[in-house]
Image (cartoon, helix red, strand yellow):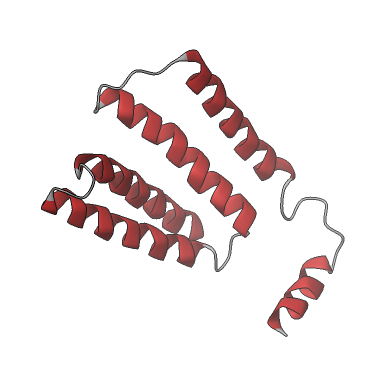
Length: 123
């Protein structure tokens, strides 16, 4: 369920970012309202996903998928141009997300480390 919440959060972030562009600096009412609602939804659902998923992995996925999808939206919908540097930068973000998911939180931890850390945080 946490990944569903994360996916909803990403969609909210994509809608919010697109509406942010459409709001033209918050000078247009309806895009501004859509921006606010979409980001509230995004943050609400990412907070739900963080109840069970590690922060570093969750945020890496959220921001990585958001960056790639926002770039695609900017090219396809807003007709913005993209250059080689942008493609390389986005590829590095994707590589970073993959590395975090393969080797990040929860990978290679000693047994009991998570329990000890969570008891420290609760104090």
